[in-house]
Image 1 (cartoon, protein in one colour):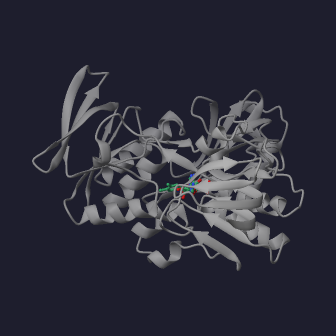
Image 2: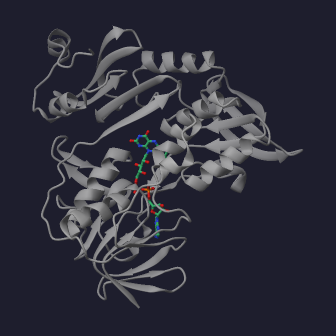
Image 3: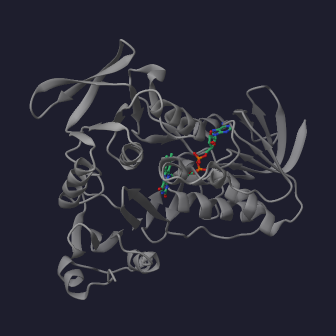
Length: 399
Ligand SMILES: Cc1cc2nc3c(=O)[nH]c(=O)nc-3n(C[C@H](O)[C@H](O)[C@H](O)COP(=O)(O)OP(=O)(O)OC[C@H]3O[C@@H](n4cnc5c(N)ncnc54)[C@H](O)[C@@H]3O)c2cc1C
């Protein structure tokens, strides 16, 4: 049996950041990363942005520190917290002193279509999608959230004919206030994307080498059909918690960790998309599916695995690019919250505040850059804040 001082399950962004964090605190302790994917750690956001804008593939790989053994194409299927051992799908056992679960998320799947639908998440998915663009130009993108909107833009920018299908009234309508969602939706249409909002996909069948999607327009009480060459879906992820759950580790909308990113099992830590943590600024337990969280939380988990006691009090930011629109954001961006919009140029440049119980719960910086720290400070402030006060004081200037 191989033994390592540090074992990381999951060769993604949090896992790579943890290896770097361990090395900051322990220059020599042996580290193993065991990853299910055939590829070493890479920058996942590049899969829907940079790689479609001509950036070379070499730029996706994350450089690991020295002394890290990376075992690829192996899924850890069992964790024995008593013996401090993980067991992979080939029966190989690896012993640890400190273990990190950085298992990310598993894509949600539709109840039909099987492997004909590409659930976009990995570098191999990117390669498959690239291959598909050379074999037929009509794509259906299912989902109007982060992944769906980025993939639709990436494909359209590369000459494909794209139809976007989703049940909500507009692109990003769970996040953007109604007016901004309507603007983004019409912006996509101007860019040539056929946006089929308000439609659910009710079925999918292969016909003469193409795919026929059965669409249901509930509002109009009508069924429609869409025929394409390829189908891509971005319909969300569920945290990958099976391994932790089977080992009896406490879950709470993900693998539950304390301030120091320790799970309920001794010597076992968790970080990234899979882990839920108590965020002091928001005053509640959250799970975040974004890069800054994976990198920062992963690093701190690594430091703590190597004996430090660094609390994870960070309020992560996130970002997205949609054609030539772009934003950064902090906190809870739910369009169900009350919003205050301050535009320098309507729908082009401005700041949107999301209010919840007298606090600023989130800030959307729409084409406004370099203001993440100010947004974090505002979300961390106790308030109380009211719409009138924010309209008067304009706490974050778009300039
Ligand atoms: C296409 C795309 C675009 C994105 N764009 C943005 C963006 O613009 N901005 C942003 O902030 N965030 C973005 N994200 C989100 C960001 O990439 C994730 O939050 C981040 O990758 C999470 O890192 P992680 O290490 O927790 O999980 P992951 O990167 O998903 O890595 C987890 C790894 O663990 C492996 N694994 C799981 N279980 C096991 C097991 N039992 N044994 C072995 N290995 C296992 C998985 O196969 C995977 O490789 C994007 C995500 C995608 C998919």
